[in-house]
Length: 548
Ligand code: NA7
Image (cartoon, rainbow, N blue to C red):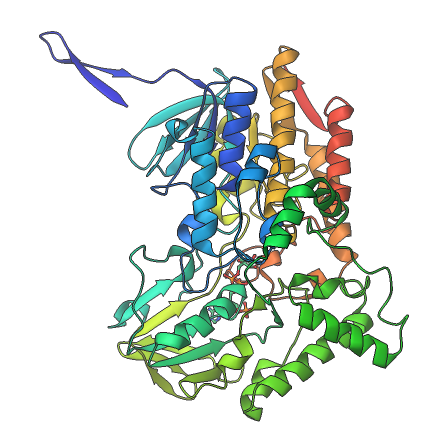
């Protein structure tokens, strides 16, 4: 906001910047591409607002030790620009956080995006002004901006979930959450560290922390499956292959329900003998990575098929972990493999063979409180210098709801979503005209290799905005019945898998106390979702109300 003194009477005049065509919230993978599409492809006036002091989103904030992507690097990138694909070179099978951040900075520079981004700018409210057909946005720094289109590019896993454990404020040591990692790092040398949480993050961080800490205690609530990542530097041959064959790789990604570049075997776990099955799992284990779940086509649909994978992984843990008590705690699975997000690791289970690593089973002995000197469970007190919360996020809805978004007549998004997120295609909510949510709940998002999901959403939104402009239309808004039908489709897609059976999954919001239990991402596969979105657009945006 600009406040000018004008004339003798010191009349304060507030000059609001002119309304923009579009405001984008976030400058991670999705915000950067959306900015490029609207500004450079459609020629609109656009700004992106970013809470961080740099681009990168998830990869700006998640700087914890061992932070690495679980998608393979040659598929974890934008595909919209052939020159970009040709001039960027990844170094490892799975890119590490600093390398992804370098990549996103490279993209920002290459497409001169920074000049349209306000950094250090957190959105605190967004109100739809129906009379002006504008979104009025306020930021923590007191800026006031307005735009016809408001596009959230806030990521699915950006609202850190720090558990409300009594006594945390009394802890005399230091505590950190992996998703808000200090930029100057955390020195574990000679320290007694406690790490709470064994999701993808904890499983990546534990082996690295154990290397420098005097002692690491891992506090495990739910035993988690993990398959070796088998990370390694990329060979010159592979790099050449990727550059020469990207269209073929892209075809594979488009055909895979999760946007990865591999085929899912066209066989059931029961089409082969137990010996053959074991040999196939062993081969997948040696190859490493998320494609372990592609060994058989029915692993996430059939509990019986899934049990064979669970048994294989349980045996592997018992083989690797020398202490039978630790092995039993680590392999005490209570849910099917890959029904929660399956981690991949580098030496996670091996870490428990180190003398300086202990494991606490929170199911048997829950945390009671944090004391000034450490963590107290129902069985013992663990003295600690540093507590690392690898406790995940208020996923999918958290980043949207904390922005206080209000649509027509002041209707709060939080009110519309009080019983769980409702929208159409994961893209729009009735009562919130011209608001688009990139990778919102109800879209494949976290079940997909994220850049694939992001590019599809950004391109769909861009085409939609271009269509409105070409037709002289001012507004687009999801219709309520379309939202209801979409909610049924999201539910049916989830129910065709084993995923909703896990009552403690963050896909259902179960990791955040009080959050409604609704299965949030669309589990019907990226290819199917893309087809639905394309058909909706081709039909003249069926299920959306458009107006002048
Ligand atoms: P996740 O997958 O949500 O994992 C969080 C972990 O923290 C998980 O083991 C939780 O146990 C545990 N947790 C959460 N709250 C508590 C409390 N209060 N007490 C003890 N343990 C707790 O988050 P990540 O950061 O690992 O991964 C998020 C995504 O990032 C991942 O899926 C990838 O897409 C990248 P629980 O299983 O809930 O019992």
